Image 1 (spheres, rainbow, N blue to C red):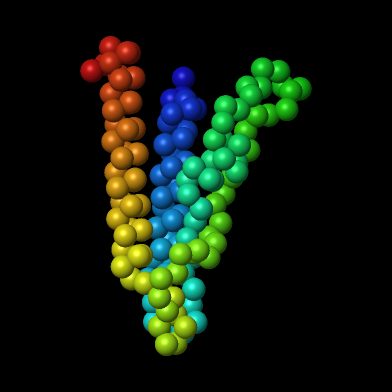
Image 2 (cartoon, rainbow, N blue to C red):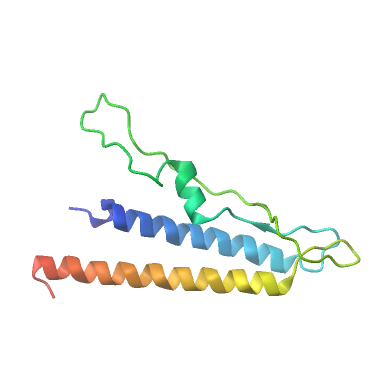
Length: 131
């Protein structure tokens, strides 16, 4: 049995992938903090990504090879940020404080996902008698 196919582990893996993608987008924003006219980008929320991919609700199970598959793999794409609080005279709209807050959220969500994986692996080990 591959525990990576369990819904919980699959969702946590998707969350970790999402956090890595979002960290890359925020890092690009910070790298362009001095670029004239640059508008910061961000990804939609993880909940929105799940909803758009069909994973936000229960997906049907394919019980026969002739049935349609129930899953859709979704990829988050960067989009412009809606809440721009200030712009520099050069037109750059990157606010470093906002970007640092976003990085802190990413770090906290990443750590939470890793802790959940660790706890659930512990429960699987206990169920198998391999504590």
